[in-house]
Image 1 (tube, one colour):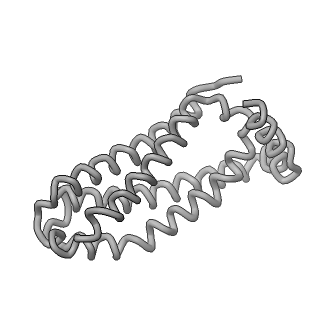
Image 2 (cartoon, rainbow, N blue to C red; image 1 turned 90 degrees about the horizontal axis):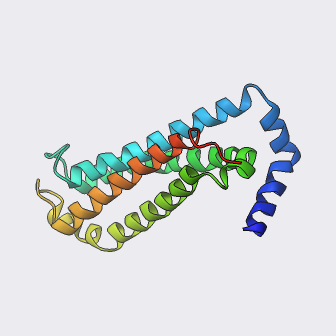
Length: 166
């Protein structure tokens, strides 16, 4: 943990991070972009999940919904990463011990693994099942897990501000 803390301290002490931390306006603007990015990314992913679960857009093919929303998902991802890095740098020494932050990172990793599993398995045959209102059990299970993980990412992200450590 000492190496991680040393890395966090190094980030925290970078001149641009100090300027960001001292700015009255820049940090909240970047934080707003971060929230918009995760909202866009998670919103598009959860929309696809809800279609796979048969709860939304039942008349549309799963592939059509997924391919239509994918560019917006990537834009949300880009906004989330580009804004998340400076946010982390400006708070790194504080959040490294924050349980909500750690949970958020674990949930992000699990959401990524879940998405990879979905695309490497059931989505490969989406044209065979993606026209109907009932998706295969494996697809529904992965979609439910995806929605749950992304909601967990959002909740844990908001809880970072609640847990004040060190």
